Image (cartoon, rainbow, N blue to C red; front, top):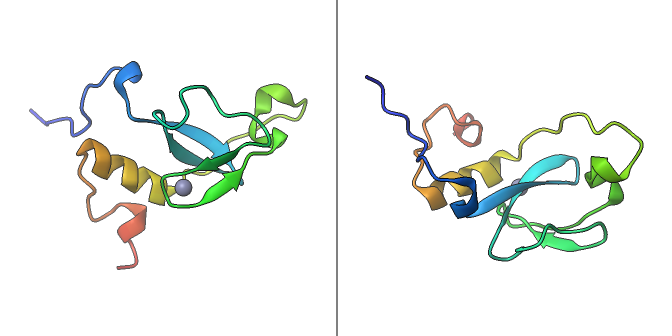
Length: 97
Ligand SMILES: [Zn+2]
């Protein structure tokens, strides 16, 4: 029987949440942002950048359909490390190494 590598952690206990910023889905620490960030706010994302959120990063606040944004794989890799989820050799951050 295959083992699911993703720990079964309830959402409330997760360390991070995804936030759309600069045309990607980045991860932010819930401890740093106990309330959801707002347009105009600077957020520190897991991949090390600080991004100022735009109103376009909040589809619910605009009349323009949001569409899907690509995952920031550097954030995803940091999330995995923090939660002890293995990063296999096919992970996008490892493809060219
Ligand atoms: Zn990122």
